Image (cartoon, rainbow, N blue to C red; front, side, top):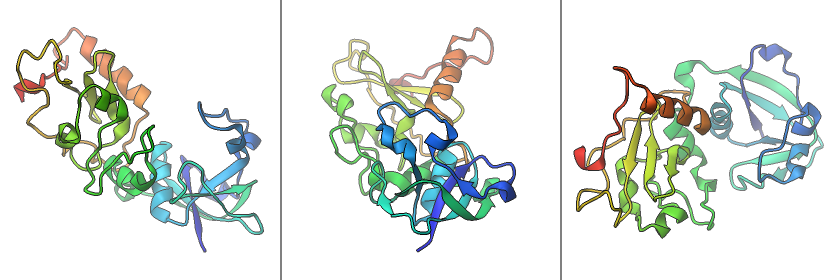
Length: 238
């Protein structure tokens, strides 16, 4: 069995001999993740899964790892797609992908969708690839049909619900779109969801920014007072 690790950024492939755990590297633990996760190296028997994780971490390198005698355990976050090893793992080879070889954000989501679940343990995506309604949005009256305009495998990371129930949607250029829940006072019997489509968005190879960074750029653009200012389109206008 071969195992692959999404290496992320890699300036010197030949220098990568061992993949160390987050604990060994002194990296902080992610919020909501059990402390024990820092003691493992994560991989997958799927090269495509490893490439997807590499893009998620802002890089474009994939390496084959050799666990040797280390026990193969299921990845607790991605139990059907990933595995983990308790301790450092030797590297057999490293490949740095060219820009055109990298999956786009929608392809990343399609690759990992089998293990993406909402907080109520329901699948985030249907078998047809369309985003299913997040639990918080469902509570505000949204349904699955409201999200079909986003297109198949739209990255859920770029959907944000505000306190009033409106949904902000971002594309890779930090352009922002909005959806309204049923009964919102600003609707005045107008369309809640755009009749247009974002099927074209998130198709650039290797582009998958952190949500925080994208929202910062979007906020700056919306607040800008110049000719480049992006006007937030209302769903009843397009």
